Image (cartoon, rainbow, N blue to C red; front, side, top):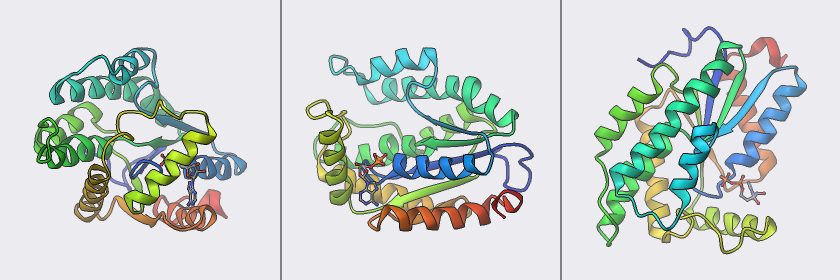
Length: 236
Ligand code: ADP
């Protein structure tokens, strides 16, 4: 069973979720900087590819010449996640560090269990059921369920516009990953999926209006972070 907020003795596992371009990596870096200034050890990580085996899995997943079915793709992502938990997340939490993840269990549920079946109705391949994804996620992650999930919510159009701009700035034009190439409809389904999860797991999720300025979002995340994770000792 996932650890409850109160029972987790060491470390904190915080995840950031939302559609492409909503600002997850931007906010993670800002939060990490603020925490580090206060003397905290912070680990930033993301999937796929945070471990040696994970890097090889990532290459397979992003290779457009492969065309795995939904279950195969899911199992590759989950194999990567298992390694991530064992070799990065678990050791960091054991050292009492704060782990900030750019996407985690919820993205799998939303992208592969919620948005993909919806997109299948307009011609994409069928997916694994949301129930099976939830079961597999919990099996793979074990005790390392997030304590707090920051959902950066904004319309798909805004997120995709930002992501496109970012890719132009970083020179990634033309090599956008498979998810960014999907239709607006798919990204709207992704947004709806995250909002659905946030409603179901009210305690764990905190929704932030990601259409606002970077600084405003950061301030709100900091306030919520301080309150929810009870870091009163470090935030004074
Ligand atoms: P994600 O990690 O969710 O895909 P990023 O953090 O990479 O998103 O942000 C995508 C782009 O949008 C980046 O160029 C970033 O500087 C910009 N950005 C992030 N947050 C905001 C915001 N609140 N307002 C305007 N631009 C933003």
